[in-house]
Image (cartoon, rainbow, N blue to C red; front, side, top):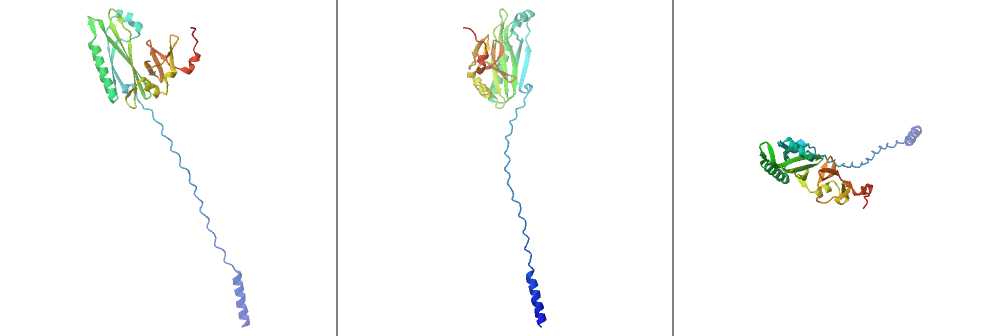
Length: 234
């Protein structure tokens, strides 16, 4: 009996010495670091894709003049023709402009007066169109011809059209569109500095702004470069 009890106690002691291993800790899930949202980049404004042929229709009739008349008037660098223009945009301003130009063309055609094959009097009209990104510029030049006197001084009308809106721009609106201030612009004509004003005929051609003076296109200059011009003695 004593042996049995001793064996029981011995086994109990052994069992008490054996410890249950601790439960393995589960690894923590890695914390998720929130990435800042990628800023939305503004879409670049696409330049409107146009061509002169799509925007402007110009129909031309050549006016018959004698070789003598052509010779004495070639100094004007003028084409003996009548141009009829139509702008292929839809806006109230453009529709009104197209109607006015059609009426003007008809008036000039009907006003041509010949004596035999010799032109006695009438108007010529030449139209040039320039495309500058989203601005369409027209230079309309008409000139009265009288047989006894030849060509009279030319009249110019310059039109700038915003192709996004179909709006015909004034000088001030054109300068604002180009981020220019007319008070800081001038051009040089016959060595004289001429400041730009509301009545200056501005021509936008090949993304350059010109003043139309004496039939010539003169590139505008910024007033900051004025000191580079030779000082004229008074």
